[in-house]
Length: 258
Image (cartoon, rainbow, N blue to C red; front, side, top):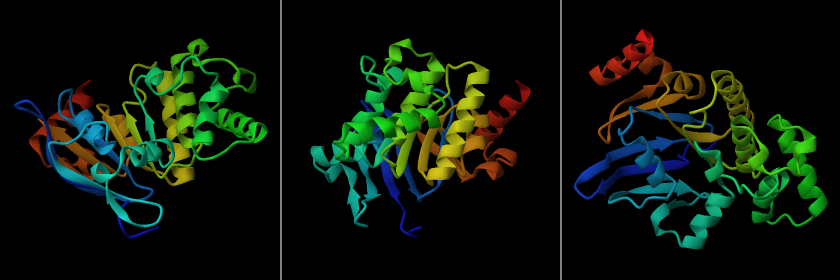
């Protein structure tokens, strides 16, 4: 594992008019590390994720990424084709609404196969075999390979989205509230699946969640945001068991009281 960070954010700031979405956020993320970004609605965590994934252009600040050749590149200095290639191959993005991360009119196998084709796979038989293997890994029955996501339940769509994103063995995965809106039993199975795959593949992950239980289960480090700013950061168990900032204490106590 490299001692050089995989991702670096420096002074990341995003304004919407006069309102700050995120303010002066800096951190390093290393290979194999899971960072949870938590906070209440409107805290800036989704804005931060959008900037890191280059979906939003920051008002100021920089994001550096270590490419596969070892070079650190500033993401907003990359060409649009270079950024698109990263998104299709080296990165994954698992969205809260799976329909935004899937081709809903394309078969389950086709959704997974498209990512393989983006990295140069052309042999139909091998693409289909790999897609079937990944559907099995995310617990989707083999006979559903030709069905479209429109026929899937919410939990199955999220599992398919995971397969689509991980099939190319990305080094960095962004997750935006991946279990929100699902039944509790479905959430539990999905979290177990995510945790096992993240560990098995050695992924670096940035996960945005309002659910501290999700953060505790999945992440090594946690970053607490309020009004666009990071108010506390540290090892997940340490921050959640002994929060030093009043806002974090309030978040933790509200969960315990629920």
